[in-house]
Image 1: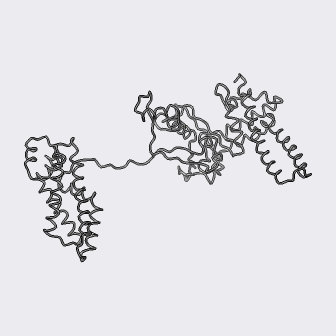
Image 2: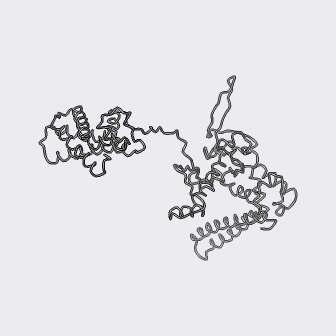
Image 3: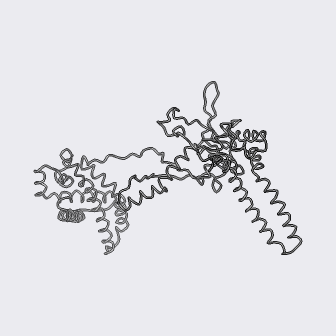
Length: 444
């Protein structure tokens, strides 16, 4: 663009608006013509009226006329950082243009609009005034917007379109109304908090969403996802090749939409984002128990019971419903399957402890029997411990621990079990432990 780049951009912008309007009119005219007979008087009269309307509309899109109309309606637009219409699109109260200087308190401590060195300003208006907002956001070849010229009381970009200095001044004064909200007000559809102060008085607080901050976050996240650089970085990671910049991922994001199918009813920036903003998770931290080895036999049993609770309940219910039933192969198979699941859960719970080599030797200070220590602490560095473990028959004691536990739970569930069942559970568990010992060389 030349030095007159902004004037050229204004002229092209208005011409584009006329092209869109003309296309819409032509479509409506063609739709109506299809209902009329070819060569009829009615069609001829309609074509004449169409030409008249096109001429009338074309005059409205002459730059001088269009700018005059735009300057007269500019008072319906507000340049803001915090827009009220994000709360409700029909809210009629004031939006706010907040200061964004780096010197603002907490600007470098808390993420807020004040953290932005050059926040993108939003335009709040009705859908009918969006074209005027678009005009004010046009930039010259140096990136300086028309709204900035207006704020500096500089009408140079508009001079070539004005018929007189008086008209130019009228345009400038009209567009200046975008910069200030002359009457601050809240609205029944706005969020409002009546905050008591003193002597029975209160402040009326109206929390507003920062459109400028939301837009900055949206641009940053979109850039990290869809830019050519970001895509190349992800391709490099996928192919395990070097790339000069890391990939960026934002987890647990939520997309919130404003304005429904008509984001233009909220603001100019909301229209650019297609009504979307990204929300980061803002939830309290989840309590995470510290992982540590069991201090006693009871501690291990309790952790095992939590993981096996569902299977145990099902086993007790299944057997109680068949107390008086004739023993069949299907019943015995189901019982064996459920008991086998409990055994697997028992050894898996132990495996979570056994695999922690960084805990080796922890059982020295635990309230466990020797057999339980040999089972749960296979990486104990003490040589005597390892010799005793290798020579001992600790699997039988662990099998007895499981069999006693299962019989106790079955009796508590109202089932009559005795030494016969104990021997069966013991045999199954003992076999499982010895099988694991053979397969993985002393880790069970």
